[in-house]
Image (cartoon, rainbow, N blue to C red; front, side, top):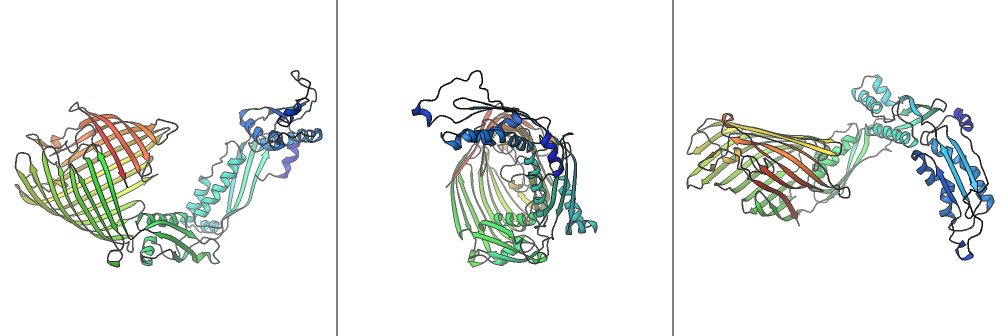
Length: 609
């Protein structure tokens, strides 16, 4: 309950009126219930006339409203009923005050009968609004702010800007309590784990229907990280966990720091669960103990899957993970896919997290992709260094690749390349798997030397970027995707096909065959040196009882080409269904390609067991 100054209590006692009338209503009739039904007859009928803003509250919380259930059919002594009726006005007044009504008018009428009838009429009056707000912060945070400490200044500002019960807002006790709790939670999230209110006061001017809020908080000391305790390790090294934690002793123990560590531990793939806790009772807040509790994953795991896609047809997959290769801090991952259109193997051997959140890795891939006009076989070997943070993933790698492209006319192109690449993923979304607000940008730039037969040998540079943005509009959710890329090289230099671009399919331009929107010669599709696509989609839930099921409409456009002078985007549009499962969205789209006039079904469904 809010703390109210004593001065206005006397004022409240003068507000409102209560009357008790014992004459029966016109509709009342004499006579008693038959003896056999007396035990089950209601002991009281309560009628409440009040605005909806308070009526449900009164019908739920008044003693008179709860009496029939508590009596359980037993006869109520007249003196007890009189006592409850006499107490009703004060109870009503206390209840409506929690909703911000401080000048109610209350009329209670009691009528004889079997059962007795009590009528309650309440006019709550005007709801009070917040007139003034004053927040004062004392303790180390205030001292640091006075010294000009940037974190303290930002923290103080965040506390005040985040206050939800602003001047002009209706005053409600629930919102008052929630605002106080949220403000203290923000202080504790900044590392002041013992922050608390020293005083909170709501000064009510019942006549003016105004409330002045005055609060004083003591921040308490700023907690800093000290000893790091790790619990639950049986197989992995403490050094790996400390590298993932990635903070030095003496770092402010903010909520963001602890949550980031917990997220990195969970994303590492080494643990099923991870919790990070601060000892808020530490005798020395400057060196507070941080405890990490972990449950490790199995040393080895294999996952088998079956799936079907409109692009590549049915497929089977096998994935194997070994988290302690040769008893060392190494993880090996291998994935095999066998399908009608695509057959592939990808593998990677990487270190566990090193200082600075880095990992060293060596990887390879072999792939065979069949299209309606060609078959592309490729082999890649990669050596690199990755860094993965909650919002940015970076990868620098050297790659050697060789590919063979066999055309339907019997000719073939053999090419290889040695290149250096940098790629990154920057994200700021509300949910990693099912985003509805924010953006994700992935970009890549690289270059090297390529050779092709037929063709020439020479240097090349490859640049690619993809932006996906999400934004809600009431019950609608919009998404925008834009991607562009280009390979810079002499006309006679053709890098391996995997370094070139093709468009078309459900992750590109819907309404067209997979990888079909690219340069074409004699009905044979080639990889292009330039690419640009865009997609706009808007979706919303279509069933109230199943909010995970969304309907969507979309428009896509784009193409890959040999050069920008030849670029003419193809347009596709359609409708779809989205099922937002815990593992990500499952989509069914029906799209029409304006260029071909064909309607295609794009389906992405997978089951793992």
